[in-house]
Image 1 (tube, rainbow, N blue to C red):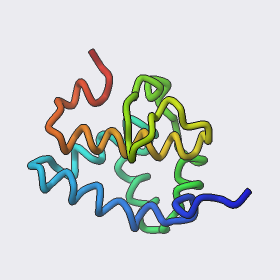
Image 2: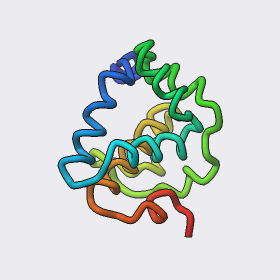
Image 3: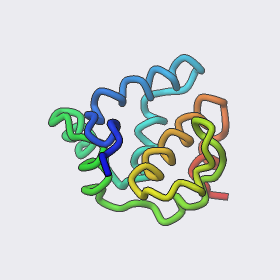
Length: 117
């Protein structure tokens, strides 16, 4: 089975799109970074290192310091597919991040995005 193209894409090449999407809707880069930290455990310095080394998505998630167990609470549809029905673990992780950024851009409160009710 061939790997999906996004797995080998540099996280640094997609990150600016996450930030731009958030900023177009009046949100901030700091909020995007907070979501990434919540999901993966990457702190600010670690995230900058990921961006500087142009780490691919597969390595980004494989080396994540602490994947948040609450990420399984992220549900819904992204790109026409239900997240909870995605079987490939890496694709599910990528879609969790996509969904969280979408929620941010739609104006959802951070405590709801980070599932901290």
